Image (cartoon, rainbow, N blue to C red):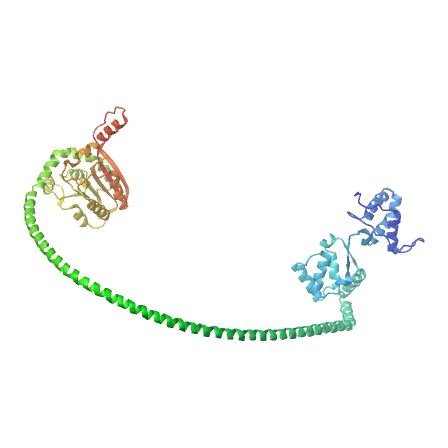
Length: 538
């Protein structure tokens, strides 16, 4: 047991019991009884538990004393059992009406505001007279939540008994209605008096509100008068400020107008003098320009005469240049290699054309076809091809070999083809003869003419090889070497897909001497002499 709990003696227990039942066995009870104090649990209940255990063990005591102890325990007021219990006066709660009554009950008994469901239930029961105020208080006291709280209610037991009896009587089928009517008649004077008091309070509140409204009205009128006076003063100030501003504006405009006239006159004088100077200068320059034009016309006439002389000389040179086609054919025969050797080298590229269905309508265009080695190889393998070249001697040789060729410029021929009409465009040892602008035109026209998925293939000398670099200009018609990376970027730029570089024509496998820089030179000299750039139209 907690050491802080005060010890109880027999006299204090008897005093609590006698206070409930009055004088007994010649013993009188003092009105100023000492209340029991308890911090954790009621001492009387602890004593009762111990006494109960002793009585239960003794059958004789159990038979005679146990019922008496139960009665005594149940009739001891809570205020003597719990010193810290809260006292609630029922009369204070019954003073309130309707919603305020329900709220006060929750706050006083449960120490919280009512939830919406409970508030609506008790308020409706009170308005419809299903439950009286006393029964509502009793319902809240009997709730599980209230049982956990430490409190006791005074001035309530008799009211509770009356309310319960009336409630049960009113529920009786016939007698209940009669009793209810009689009670309403008996309560009528009291209700009328209550209503009269309510009207009296309402009239007092109404009078107070009227006085308050009159006070507010008086204050508002006085405030409005003050505001009107302030507005009048502000209007006067605004008018004065506007008049002052108008005067200042007029004065400023007059000053600005005078100054503007002065500056305009000054600028007009300066502009006129500048115009005179410019006019005289223009006349002088015009005279000089006339002299210059005469000199230019004289020089142009001299140039025209010289051009006529050079054009006559060029015509003679062109006539002699007709033999260049025969010269280039002879050059190809000597340095290019035999037709069979070239065909053998070009056989390497035939698998690239496997995507073409030979039985369908297709077309391969070989620009710069030369002696027709590639055309002959295509024809022997069942492909339909046409060659294009500007060299008349080469064209004659191809025709004599039964090949389909045409005498035309490669770019002009492609421009004459319809869009997406060619399956493949090829060219061997041709693009190194073209200038930069012509290479760009070639890429554009090839993309336009190729069918979707069509292929281009152009072979050219490989400038990565030292051997090729030393012999590149053996052919006078070569324009410039074309590095593989530059050509690949060109066709990538114009939107071809799958562009790749294929190096071919390796001179021979060199013998290295395990010297880094020397071996690099040896490798560069003996590496692939040609490369082909291959790509597809997306």
